[in-house]
Length: 269
Image 1 (cartoon, rainbow, N blue to C red):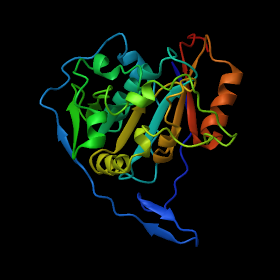
Image 2 (image 1 turned 135 degrees about the vertical axis):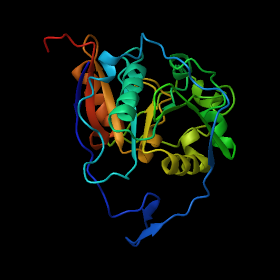
Image 3 (image 1 turned 90 degrees about the horizontal axis):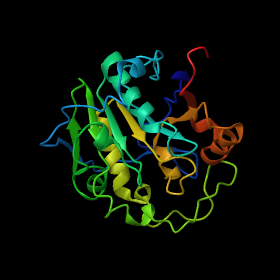
Image 4 (image 1 turned 180 degrees about the horizontal axis):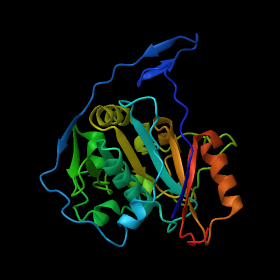
């Protein structure tokens, strides 16, 4: 696995929860935060087929801005299609950040139709993200790795029921990384509670990594990238094409891609 990452440009002109009014004035938004609590169960093992020292030690560059030790960093991990290795990259990146930078790190499962983090970390799928969007408590689980926590997807048949069955209607971009039309009414990122969730997570964790659906999956919540510093795109050396990368740039916006991770690369590359 080869990693190519760009450092995100820092913007110190805004607070973590601010917006620019129509008059051009920066205004703060005060959010009612949720409480982050530890689950009663915890991850006592990890799937060695996904997580291994050879993989998480391959991340030799820091994704965190160099000029601040307190700034949050939120990144999503996606790819052209399912099976390219998103979960593998997200899990090993999370371990690398937790152990290498010794920062409180959370990995969140947002792969709505193919959640895997509960299997990777050998823990129940609920409570997780779905419950956190509709309840005042945000449940995360400890792992065997110091500074690393996991949030599973949760009850996929409740909050995400509409998104997981989009009836074959794929969201198409307008060339600027933004989808045409309105967001799906069941899109969790359109809920006001999602912003509250992000505010709570940023208070508790320095690094937040989202394991997301593939670009080709119509349930990819593109609007969520607005809450992130950017996206990492996993390139499968066997199947990802130049066209795939161009389509990704069009759907997400090229400025939203922080870098690329080449998966299944030959050692000679």
